[in-house]
Length: 269
Length: 173
Image (cartoon, rainbow over all chains, first blue to last red; front, top):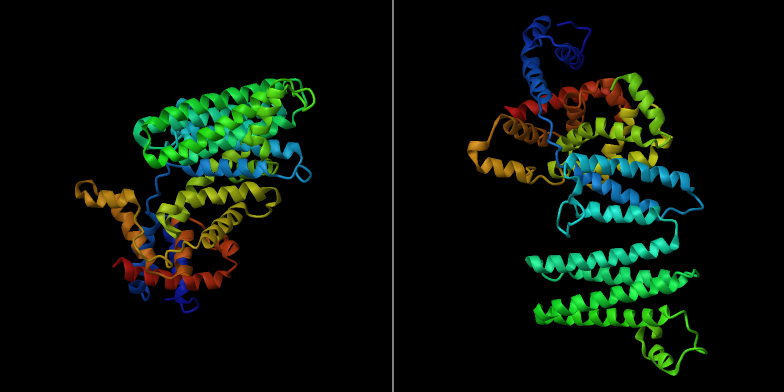
């Protein structure tokens, strides 16, 4: 053994030779005095270097998380700090990653009809989120909220009929989206405002009807939850219906309209 | 991806060019998964690799110097942040796929044995040693690169290497 080198240095040199492709026997021949100690260590190195790589076929999951987080973060970026170009760039990266995710999964059109619990459901939500963020027009945003609330209803019904029970989270999201559509819709000053209010009213009507059908099949506990939700849909429908009739003010409303407005719980909130 | 390509891709990635980011992701994602797979719990590897790339996207604009060293430093921090060191959870490290295949002995094959052996052996050495072994022999980094990631001198790394392989032998034998 060369006395100028410590055993740690000799091991390092021997490993470099091994990595370069040299045979263990040949390497040890250069260090006969340390051979006994080095041999098992070099053999361990060989085993470690042959460690199999994990399969990453499910890489869609982390990708979805990355994209979703990026989308979330971008949604809340302060526009004063981050200009639209930066925001657009981040979204483009998210879109590229989404394409990889979809291609790597190999089922491009699977996202549209998914329900919670499906692999592709997060992609569906993500797509909605990205579409919403990319919409600059306020009316378009209200329309999207109406669409998403309706979509949650479809999922809720589909899940219920496939034996998944009443998904309370979906129900909550459905109602929240509807309420958000109303809140955003009320801020509009355009001529399409009454039309959008009418659409929210129609949507609430549809939701109320569908929930009533579910209620007939539901267990007593779910019946109560559905009852409250139906009531909320009814309030929303009633309120939007009144608001859709050309924004009547108290002074130009008919007595019947004024009475409806006063009795509507949404007005009291 | 050779050095020239990496430089080129990095230059574009720093401007958040989507194609460059995608290339980086495709090239480094399997490497990072492999690192985390052996370094932390197998079940968490892909989740944490996702976290790593999220951090990369957030901060690549300001990245300078050796990219791989920077990337692995992020991966280390993600593992530390999540508190998922193998030592802190010495219970089984097998994911569902492994456990299932072990039960069905006819499906057990060499690569699974190898993964299990190495996982078990790595869980027997201390954290510093495990990290070195993974960087050097599983990830294929050299001492200089590991020094950049860990802020340790080459001499210190040689000492860690010696002690780590000694400890590993005991676990593998």
